[in-house]
Length: 576
Image 1 (cartoon, rainbow, N blue to C red):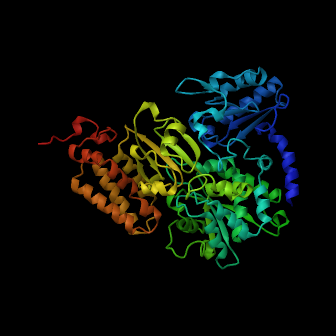
Image 2 (image 1 turned 135 degrees about the vertical axis):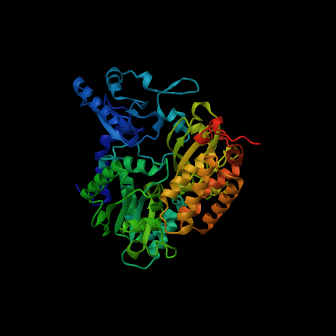
Image 3 (image 1 turned 60 degrees about the horizontal axis):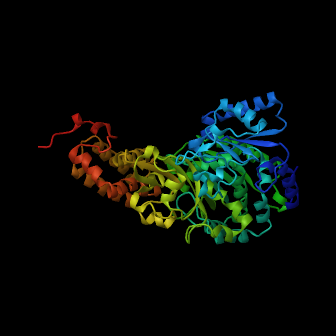
């Protein structure tokens, strides 16, 4: 069946809805049909959710219930700390930490017996209460899922499920407008790039459209490289059609007929589901020629990256897509003027694209009503480190760090004391207790010396050594430097050497002064954002935790005992 009009799409949606009606909260419960949604994201698969799915299917068949119950492998539910996760619909019952052997109890007690499996329900750590519905779990209460709207709700390998939840309707609406009208909608929404820089998305589309050239390109940056970050991967694994739909809309808006998804090869599941989704979209006429009878043609292909952090920078990414070394180019010209093969090119990251269809469907005023004055909508964060609720969270811009760490994240692991949180990955900085009530948006994070970045958020407690944290990030940055400019290529190595001397108890105060001076030189002299932000972890830890640096140097002691060379008295030098 080819979708050649909005009318055809509406008919397909009506037909497809029969597959997902049990997951629609507005629908009544019909007879004894059930859907069992099982997390099929990378994290849960690593915890054996594939075997859990096999066991559920085997037991259903053995009990004669396989015609009454659907097993759906979904994307990530976000609550990674509690995975694998199983959700029963339409009962809206949420089970956590489910292992393959639990399949029997789920089928026999819940599906057949009609009784919840109490031991699999989430237990509130504050009062030991068992919580049945995911919306009542503190982890989800303050979240607003826009980019993650379909993750954990649809089978990402089934285009009909995506269509049932209004998939490709935004594309139909966009193609009924002029490209300029589509760009105007995105500009009015206030959407800014979620890859780190926060550049206005609608303006980037406008600049690319206005650039001269008959051939233009739109690229999805799926080269997620921050340590501990998995936002884009989860969207691609859980809702790949939303990215395809958004890229087609973006291509139409800027005048491009070809899109490229640049994804790191270390994301095999995301790549597999993207390939399945592209094939399905082509089969239904949503990719290719004359989409929706609009005379608009668009194709997408996938390019693999080798996992270079610097390729998150758009000019380095474009060089890599062209088959050259992934290193940044001087600007101007900007990619919107001369990008892929010197043609006007628009580069947006995965999360940015994931917001496009909801904006088209619900209108720019709806989106701009969420968030703060300058930072609209929501932001997805990968919450990791010394925190109870590790996982993927999406909150409105303006939510405070305290709310994310304590309300959503459940506080610090094992009752330890909060020490700092690093936002923005290796390019960001540490934020301490005094700034926890800072609203999360581009401006406020910059004011306190950090940055939004792509969305990594690593929480540290009193057992973390901040000098060692700086060394960890500097080692990562040093290895990831493309080597094109001297400040970054040589400077990051020298900074790492100084940090190595400090953690080994071999440094002097003069070394510390040199480290700080070098950090500012690299910040001012590097070619691209990787080098310019490389010193941030050092400068922010020096600002807030200079006493730890001094303790390592003068007393030859690591206060947290995390630095092995300084963790025992025998390694201390006697001060005379």
